[in-house]
Amino acid sequence: MNIKVITYNIHRAIGVDRRFRPERIVEILESYDADIIALQEVDDGVPRSRELNLAKELAEALDFPYYVLGKNVSLKKGHYGNATLSKFPIVRERNIDLTIDNKKRRGCQHTTIDIPSSPHKAVHLDIFNLHLGLSAKERDKQIQKLLNSSELKELDKDSNKLVIGDFNDWRSLLRKPMTEDAGFKCATDRRYKNKVSAMKTYPSFSPRGGLDRVFYQGDLKLENVFLCRKKLSKVASDHKPVITEFKL
Image 1: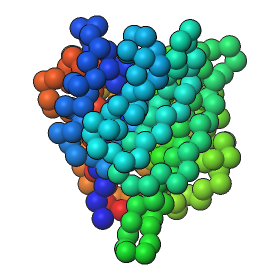
Image 2 (image 1 turned 180 degrees about the vertical axis):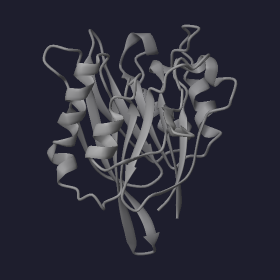
Image 3 (image 1 turned 120 degrees about the vertical axis):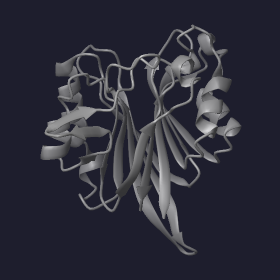
């Protein structure tokens, strides 16, 4: 079967025009009819976003029956973190702490999703939805922490999994540990002759950096990957959403 997966740092649904407009995020996402959506920078109970639970609001607006929010950062009022929305049952959810020393709190939300393969059987797909730090040393420690986590190590290399989200990796320094060391393939790499570069997703109005990545492993075959082409995506968030299509 084919599944469509989107990763999108929604910037709390506050656009580059500094306006809180969750309906713009909804319009962008509903146009692609995805099966699974991994979101970063999702507020819950924060005044800047009308104290809404954005994961719940977006899931309901997009008609997704299953959603979970992994809260990473506590504010004076409310929290924010990563959220995963799914049209298929989420059978397990954990939040992996990727905070390094006294840096800003960061996390990776791990969900196990059951995708029906026949009337009485389902295929597991494990999603690791993350948002990494701003310094290269911090990100390197965070990716090692993830790769050595019990949540990832308990899965064998043949299991179906995605490591997806905002890597903040301007120079693609995490490609080697993810691909050569851990054995993942990268859906968001672009190859031209002998050069490899990342699809540019940030800033949304004039992308220069490939911060949003999709790594995959297992019985997943990449069918297509592209960036949102809607004009609205230039203002709705400071990141572009990445749309991937896999055959499972």
